[in-house]
Every structure is written in C-alpha cells, then in structure tokens.
Image 1 (tube, helix red, strand yellow):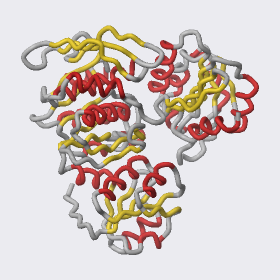
Image 2 (image 1 turned 90 degrees about the vertical axis):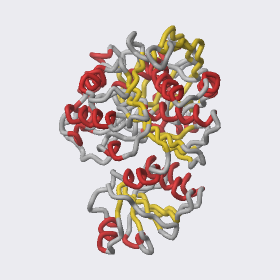
Image 3 (image 1 turned 120 degrees about the horizontal axis):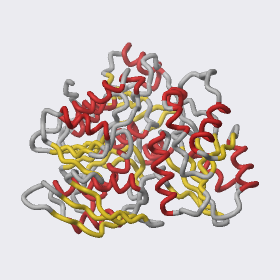
Image 4 (image 1 turned 45 degrees about the vertical axis):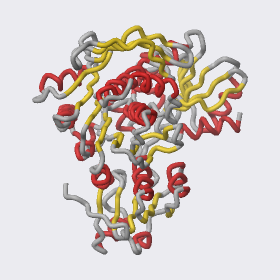
Length: 465
C-alpha cells in the first residue's frame, strides 16, 4: 500500500459517512485540522455526531458533492458505480478505501488492533477505557459508541491508538500492528472469502503480522484459533480463556445481576506466575468476562498497574447496542442489542439467563441479510434456547435483493423445534407495539436483537407503549 501524502489544505470527502467506521475516521481527521465533508443516503446518529463537530453533511449522492474536493474516501459498502465515485474518477480525484486512509493516519501511533468474529467492539472499548484510566490519552477508533465518550472515535494526544479492525472484507490485514487481540473466529463473511479456509488463512496472516516487539493475544478456547496456533511460524503470542493451558486463565467466575466477578491466573508470562483476585467487571455474561480478560492481558503487557486495570473495569459504562437498557415500565425491562449472528445471540441470552433464572425472556429478533440466515439456518434455529419466547420480525435485507426462496414461517418453525421456544410472527413495527401492549404483564425482559432497524423499534416502544 502506497503512502498517502496529506496537506491541511486538502478537502476530504467521505462517501458513505453515515457508517460507524467512516464517521469515526472523519471525526478524527476533522480534529486533526483537515477540511472534511461527507455524503450518505440518510442521516443518523453517526452523521449527527459529525455535524456537531463541524463536518458538512450532504444527504444523497450527487455529482456536485465532489466540487472543490481533492481527496475521496469511500466506504466498503459503496458500489463502484456510485455517481460520486464515477465523477471523482472523471475529475482525476484520488480515491481511497477507508482502511487505506485509516492505516496512514494511525501509522504515526503505536497501534493496538482488535479483531475477531464477535466481541471486538466491547474488547476495543475495554482496552481504550483501561488505557484512558491510566491517563495515556489514546486515539480510539471503535465499531460502536462508547457510552463514556458518547462517540465511537477520539483523537488522543498520547502515543497509543486502540483500533477495532473489521475482518469482513480482508481490510484488517492493511492496518499497522504493534499489539493485537483475536477474540474468536466464526463462519462469517464467506461471501467475501469464498470458503472458510480462506478466512482462517487471513487470520493467520494477521496474527503473524504482529512484530517481535509486540504481542498477539489469542482466545485459546476457540477451536478455530487452536487450529491456527498449531500452524503459526512465530511464537509471538499469549493465550487467554477458561482453558487450563491458557497463559491468562479465568477462574472462579461469579455472575450477578449487574456485574461479574472473577480471578485471573497468569502462567508462563515473565519470570513468575501471578494470581489476580476479585476482578469486578461492570458487565454481565461469560462472553464479557472473556472480552475483559483479553483487555487485561494486553494492558498488563503494556506495563499498566493492576489497580488501574481493576478501577477501569469496575467503572466501565459499556457500549451502545451491547445489551443497552432502553427503559423500564411496569417492571418490564427493555434492552437493545446488536447481536445478529447465532453465536452472539446465544451469548447474550445465556448471560441474561444466568443472572435472571426465573424471569421471562422475550427475544425480539430481526434477521439480518438473507445470505447469513440461509448459510447459518440451523445455528439460528438453535440459538434461542435460553429465551422463553421469540418475536420474529421481517428480514432486514441490508441491501441484498429479496430472496423469494426464504420462507419466514418455515424459519419460525425451525426456531420453535430446535430452541424449544414459542415463536410469534409479526409484520411490522406497529405489530410489535400491539403485541407488547396486549401481552406484557410484569417482570419480563424484552431484548431487541439485530443489526438493522430493530434498535429504532425498541427505542420507539418507550413512546408508543
């Protein structure tokens, strides 16, 4: 990848600025003093954050949006026939992928790169929170809004950058690495990689990119990561997890209604073994214990003190759309979660079930992408076992063409059969409101899950119920 030379006189136009990654990078570059603008089909919270920082937001894609522009940055979601990209090529304006621009921006920092199929946003937030608590003022680029920042990006004055890297299109291989975390590897994004072996090869390349002066932290309990570890040419990594052979082993987890407590045994790291006791994490669920353990492992290797790490985990205020409590009414609690893959759904529901064993859990699930549901149909059908009821929403296609072979009723029957749960079919947001009005009594836990418009539906219930 060639170096991008930038001057502060550049006018940088982001095509698809409403995406979480694009908006974060745009805000970083604006804070650095560049002239930044961007376009997207619709306004959202991300574009609002950009606007509040003084970034010009243009609604819709038009030729004239490229007037006076000297550099174009495009989202991976933008098609090659986009009118602004075509106009940019016509005008010989340099066009870069988001990841190329990001790589050049963070090349000046010491970089901590977090990737993996699930948990990378929360893990990135936890690492950023610990380093911030240590007053090292990191640059942060995350895939979700960190509640304490009210944003997903921040330009810090310190030497560290904490960055979530997306594996979905192979772009995580383009970012410079000093330290890294791989949370897990699941069967995702096969439409890009063509087969699962190619995905595994990409993660192997990523891990081996970590330089000798850094370290990679790998989740040992994950069978796919174990496969890669056996083939690694370098031993420049540490492992974490519940597994007895992990360098950082989770012990004595205790799951409570508002938090989780656990101990950490540290083995074969440095000159002596350590045992950190009574770590209190302000999140629930086994998956979040693992996210926190990854963050702790890395931060200890940076030389951060145990008391600073404990303080950061205890005070962590979470990430938006990661089991975010929206409101409570008549003792019924409503949550919003980004879970849209079977592994994520299962983790969220099991985490809630452990701390609320006798309460009724209602999952409001909006399937995301026909291709994902079809390729993982049986995994989706069996991931709701910890739920008492599933309200199945219409498919959120996310730009995919309608697949007429997908049958929602048959999909509902599969969920009912394999998860042993009652499934209710609804057709729209209004149906959800009606169902909740009629059927919620008290003490239920309602969790909206999906990567599409379901978040808005759950927030709207606060006004319509």
